[in-house]
Amino acid sequence: KAGVTQTPRYLIKTRGQQVTLSCSPISGHRSVSWYQQTPGQGLQFLFEYFSETQRNKGNFPGRFSGRQFSNSRSEMNVSTLELGDSALYLCASSQSSSPGELFFGEGSRLTVL
Amino acid sequence: AQRVTQPEKLLSVFKGAPVELKCNYSYSGSPELFWYVQYSRQRLQLLLRHISRESIKGFTADLNKGETSFHLKKPFAQEEDSAMYYCALSFTSGTYKYIFGTGTRLKVLA
Picture (tube, rainbow over the protein chains, first blue to last red):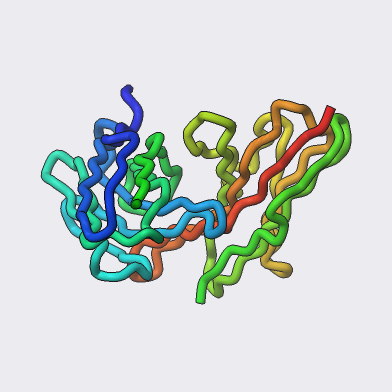
C-alpha cells in the first residue's frame, strides 16, 4: 500500500498570502488529521476529519481551515499568512473511527517571509 | 484539561547505557497511550502502544495509572536509537482526540 502522501513538500509564501496543502491518506483510511510541527511546540493538533465531517478542531485561529472529500483526500488552507505560521504541517491517516495508530505523511514545510 | 508532558527536550546517553524517556499525562478517563518516533529524514511512525504490551526495538513502556505516567525504557541504548520521541494520548470521549507531547530528542553517544 502506498503511504500517506502530502503535497507540496516545500513552499515559500509571503505574509498575507494564502496556502492550500493536500493530503492523500492510505487507501481505505477514512480518518485524516492535521498537525503543525515546530521545534518549540512539538505537534499541535489542528483538526480531524472522518467521512467528510470535521470531528474536532484544535486551538488555532479561524485562518486555519480544512475539508475532506468523498475519496478521503483532505486539504487544509491557511489564509492571511503570518510569519509564525512557518512550520512543518503533518497529515496523518488512520483506519478506524476510533483513535488508533496514526500513519504520517512526510509533511509540507511552509516558510512565510 | 487533557495534557501530555515530556519534561526533557534533550536526553544524551552513552551507547550501552540505560535509557528512560519520561511521559506524564493528565486525563481522568481510560486513555490509550502511544510512543511515536521520528528518525532523521524519516516520517513520524508508531513505536509502541500500551495496549499491545510489546517490546519494539528493545523498548518497553508501562502504563502507570496511579502516577499517570507512560515512560519509555530501554536497558542498553544503541546509536541507531538517536531520534525524536513523542508520547501521545488518545481518547474518544464525545469527539476524537489525539494529543502529543512536545517531544524528547534522544542522542546516543558513541
